[in-house]
Image 1 (tube, rainbow, N blue to C red):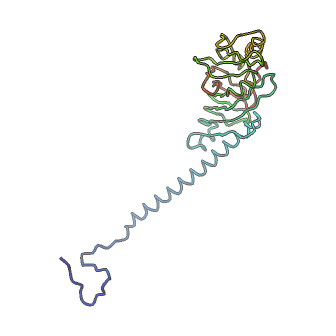
Image 2 (image 1 turned 180 degrees about the horizontal axis):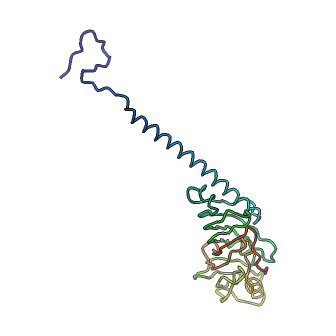
Image 3 (image 1 turned 60 degrees about the vertical axis):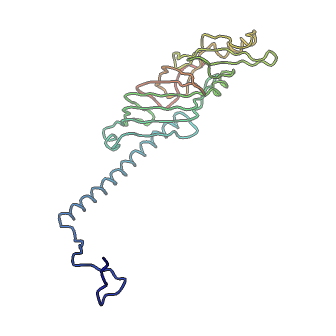
Length: 261
């Protein structure tokens, strides 16, 4: 049912009956709770911001030490995990730090093999002492070595093999054509990658091709451009390169002192 507009009231104005509900101010206790909640929220935001600044400083310091020590063209990516970081710094140990670096050059070897990508996870990293000395409770790292870089270092074309733990090596001769062999790869001492169990899969292994392959594969190739203190545990051929896995308990941001080959 429609209700007629009362006399003296302008059309278009809102009409409120006697039963209209009016908003009232919150009681004093409610206002105090609102103020306290807002203050706590502002304090939390401030603490998080300060903690993030501390984490960024630790990340920048670690990245700078790594770049200077390892000679990388660009600073690595560094991420400090865990909250709050300020508490970890006060205790002198960061819970976990991840480092990712690209294109680490190889120097001082007769067969320089750069590391295409290196990822390092540092658990329980001590924050006291030199920034170049990263002492941690546990260290795990993976160095990715692309087949292109391996091929340049060895002088023969390296590609993925058709069986687990193996790669193909192809020697190209101007007149005799290509000779391809299947080779097993494994971790050797002093952070080196060894090649063994060579099997001809294509072509004829004539003396010039054999000499070329022997020169490339007879001796293990060292990985000297990983942080000192890491120890090579395993190597795994993948579709685009080799993953070399390392462990350690204390690393220094300078190239490994493995013997050159």
